[in-house]
Image (cartoon, rainbow, N blue to C red; front, side, top):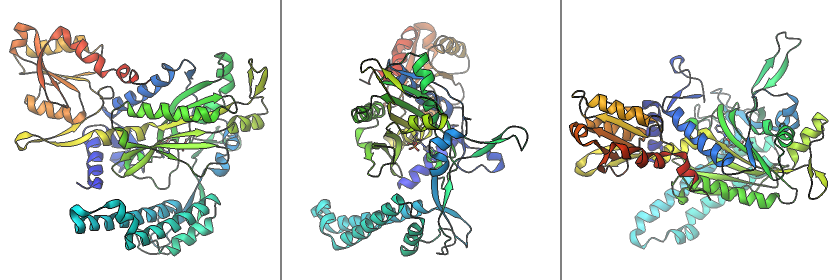
Length: 513
Ligand code: GAP
């Protein structure tokens, strides 16, 4: 099945089973805003727990905060967001549709990649077993011609972006003959910068009201609380502050479901270090964060680092953790060495001294910062994309199974009475009433056991148990494991020990060094 079709299926699965709904759906939705349903919220909370606990339980020197979304507007001036948090926009005069100029060019680059892949596929078909892909890519005339065009475009695009050269961005769009996907024309406006921050007003009268921004990142709430936490927590450098919270960006091109949203959630950690040690900490945090991702068991081959060649003026290193989504390797997390830019800016704009007195050096300095920043929703999407599988079974049957890591699954155990009579529902409830204190359980008595298994496979429930007539005599139930579909008879009193450890967040944390 084409990856595009797989992705469509994942999106509809999310809706059908109560993971993610379009926001305001009965009013035809609201662009790039989504709601998490009854199962989605459980999965999302488990992802957040996994991150939060890995930061605050496994590191003695990392503490959490929860800062407000509304902040003093000068914060965004100091951070550079008011002046520079922009996307380059272009409109098509015929369709009146608005696009991000950089995205139109990135799509064009992707078209060159697709053309190369088509040539490779043709070569594979033509040469069959004798096909040597590496040699073909290095020598085939058509492939080399397309690759050269792509490289030239990439170079020109990177220079234009780096120089914030909007005229050149437009010229690239014209020279590459990029058309509007709606009108099919090349009737483009100039390229303009568009600030991504949402604004609102605080205060009751128009004269007294001031412009307030909805935060586009949670990080600034950490920077402006650096002194509070350092002093009240008597924190010694190196130390970190972690936070999970909503962020808002008026994305122009919002697409790929919950990959790029206007309201989303971030899990960010700022790690304050001694100047000069930041690059060591940067590599250490890259390793730590990659281990966190890989502990989920999705396979190392599905992750890669993308080190930034072009850095923001305040950063001295930056790398993304990319995950293989059905639409290619995409950024899920950013790890940045942000120097002392943010703290220095806030010191300058607030007039406060924001420093650390190092007792070992007997001197004060402005700490440098390593930031790890991951989107909860992107993480959710990567988990869903990896977990979704349409599995062919023996005998021609098939099932949709969500192979979620058990610790992230919304429901850990489904409890089924074989029939709705003979005291079996009562026994099933008795078991549930005992186990519900330890992990999330669900009770189901409708439909055949087979159908109930399928329903729970589709939502990723790692274990199901069936209470039958024998249970009343021998105190045993049949437990069935989602992935292997193996069934075995176990004692009711052993259930907790058998399941709890496997489905707990602790089981994931123990995999982290
Ligand atoms: N404080 C640094 C910062 O915000 P970023 O690369 O702009 O860096 C960090 O964002 C992470 O937040 C991204 O890797 C992504 O997972 C998530 N993210 C950013 N914009 C998003 C959007 N519009 N929708 C969903 N997630 C987003």
